[in-house]
Image 1 (cartoon, rainbow, N blue to C red):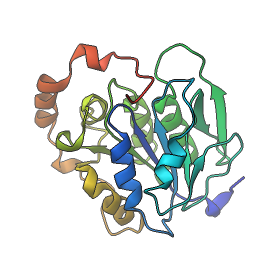
Image 2 (cartoon, helix red, strand yellow):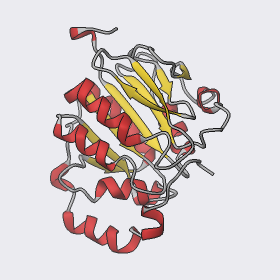
Image 3 (spheres, rainbow, N blue to C red):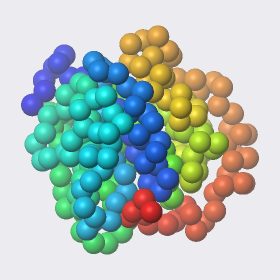
Image 4 (cartoon, rainbow, N blue to C red):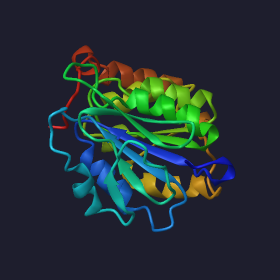
Length: 230
């Protein structure tokens, strides 16, 4: 268990369809000594082989491994949510895995992960919502916002599937930063060492979010129960 002032910030990277390359690009830009614990969650079929950590380690300069029940969150280490389990974080900064079963909704659930991170890390929490179908992550991102954390989403031009980022961006009172995937690593580093403002909300126009809604919020995409990236 990590206690008191030893608790690092927590960065959660969540995605579904089209998000793997985005995660790889972000991790490749994080340098050794990165001052936050990182959790990666990608929607996967519950029966899928747990290869994601191995794949991500090829592009990451931080150590990456599959999350296990009871793991402590440690700065500079990446834990990957396993297939077949919802992954959550306790107030003691440890991982809890709960079997997801074989039925929808989204598996693993970004909303469950992010809500637990919000409660555990409060203003030390940062979420990045990346490419994917559906709306998973928007509710959890809202919890992170309300408990003092920072909410980031990839922009339309660099989201292979814009539904998931859009669902968070459309909550204009929640989103702090919207930017290309290639700029997210530098933003994370800047926020965590205090060089960059945690929020650029004043530059995010509700009208722009409404325009994105007209062009991208298709009911079939928003309601899709994603279980796999491909």
